[in-house]
Length: 399
Picture 1: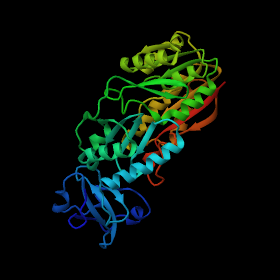
Picture 2: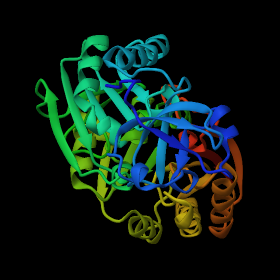
Picture 3: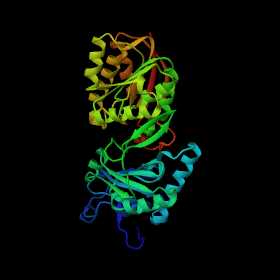
Picture 4: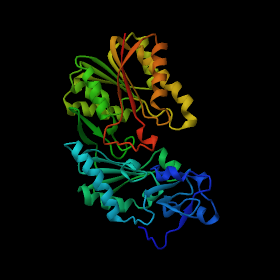
């Protein structure tokens, strides 16, 4: 994949911060690179040596002149070679961690930069895996990734999920295809005592959100004997976990009829179908309608999409999180519990917590913050890259 004798060189501008790269930051932005004609003509996904302004080697990188993230660090050693064996070693290292953490092969196997494979997400569903090649280099070498993945893990079926905002920012087309094997129908996934149905071809992202596993478990501890409302439920994440833990009932609310149908199938497979109800519609409108109907729940969980996916969207996103908190707080019975989640990396924990607290107050309620949750350990964080610590979950008890 790389030939150290022929790969090009790209160079930082004199005022660019080379120290950040030396200390582990994995990205170089377009305005930090000497953008001469040769550099800007490089094909997206090209491997290159990165040098500082004094021509000292910094790292082996992959470049994309079409992206604001011009270069991604592959290896700190600028003379390293990226090959199929290199890919297999990185996947094998990621696999060793997950096998230590989980007793069944259902997890995020590769979490991009945090696992040393920039822009690559791989979720595993037993003998099936879904690759999201969200960087140009991974798109160009997705078949080599698939071969290495099969060699290391033994998976027989591999899907390429080429959708999402990250690919758009890289200038990559949307495409979902089966690379190897065959995928027919949703895949059942056991987590926290429940069975979820993951649509690996037509579902959101890779079909299931493994990152919420530990937060599902915490919410389930609050839900024994409770009436539960799961807003932005997708395929029933919090609701099914709550029912498996002994909740009296759960109402799943989502805008997607397909997701709610999968939640119902998961409830049937889990043996709790008679205790799950679904309601399709805009989450804000449904919460307003439930309040008008006088409905109250012992546990309410809201897990919305990323309202602040970037810094320019932060202000509007925080207003949306505040509104979610205000509307949902009004649906919690006295002494009940409210869980609020954010997957927006641009909204850090403090900003999200403040917006949630404002919303709860504007909803006429006062809350105790009981627990702060994050993504599970199969979604490790790279300390130098805040984007890898995107998920926050706050659990309150309301008066």
